[in-house]
Length: 115
Image (cartoon, rainbow, N blue to C red; front, side, top):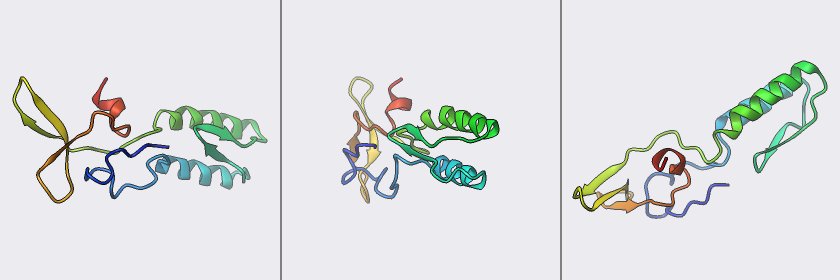
């Protein structure tokens, strides 16, 4: 689960619930239900469910590889930049203001911002 440290100050995640459950998981769940795998779920990034055919197994493995890459995902971020070259401030706008919320520990953006 994504820890939302800045949820009450930053405008980025206040409207994005279920950050720990990207839409691709629902799509995968529905896909496997259509193949008869009714107990296909993800719990803490671990797959639960037993495929009964080679086709289900191949799709299952493909989905695990695809989904584990997107845990703690975020679709987009419009970063605000202020300050000077010597002392930059990079973050997201506080909701309904032009104040910048510094987000050094934002787990939703961490993998793309701090590489």
